[in-house]
Length: 114
Length: 110
Image (cartoon, rainbow over all chains, first blue to last red; front, side):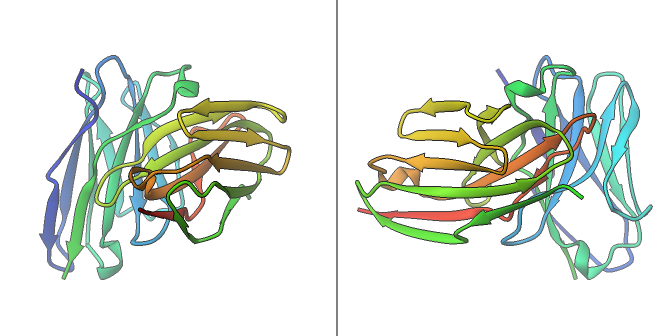
């Protein structure tokens, strides 16, 4: 049973560029959340998608946007990259109403902005 | 604002030396408290969900407990493979997001 798949695993971008990160949820899951994890810190919630709609958003600027597709996969887009956007970006999937069974996280995309 | 504080930041133990990790939280109506394990370069791995004060859950050498203000992760007779960062997170009622603490980095020496 495939877990959460994220791509790419590593990425280096230049300040000011745009980036798209991708996530395929665990089989049977319909909800995708994105988190940003800086080195040595806990993950911070960016937003969550369910039924192709953004359900909740954390304290991140509009430069961060997302999308969910009919097959439940998701993309995270970041525009006008800043050095401070360098972090591990985690995707977590769950089944709506069954969050008690835990959110399943992918291994993340390591983004470095230079 | 929902908040989670974990202590200590780092803990080094000898193999077989039992200890506890602490997670203090404030939340506007607890929907669930989650414990995760994270290995370097990997995503968090789900361990437990706790819902109400007095609840306990166990898995191998790990036992999680919950009060109205904090949760403990007890590690009994740990092995080197238990070395990881342990993350605590809360989810408030009517919220979708998890609010994480900064984690406790646990090292078990053989």
